[in-house]
Image (cartoon, rainbow, N blue to C red; front, side, top):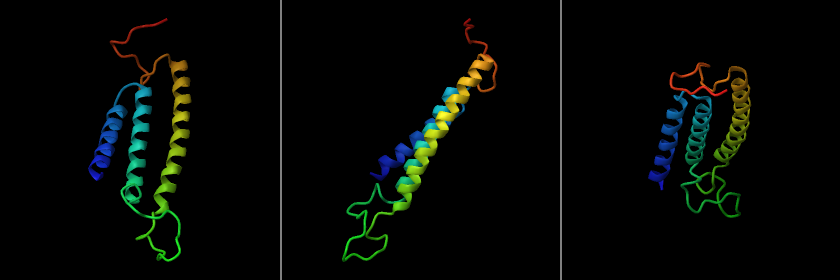
Length: 121
């Protein structure tokens, strides 16, 4: 299970970085989204929640009140907050992308046309 999770985080991170280095703004936005998913998986896995078995999510009578017997709620809260912030950030970037494309007529990050781009009018 740990190997699968580590591979998923690595693939998401690698794909996100590759898309961040692309010249078009939509690809950059998708790269940021993939990186945020990788970070969410990493935070979630550091809380031992996804990899732990037989851990109670709430306090039970008769068990000591320490993290050895319970799931850690902090990574869940951090991941949920990161998902909400990431959604808002993606929506804002898409609005900026549409406005920039409308004003400049191109979706390249630097605002210039590539030599192989076809002109559409």
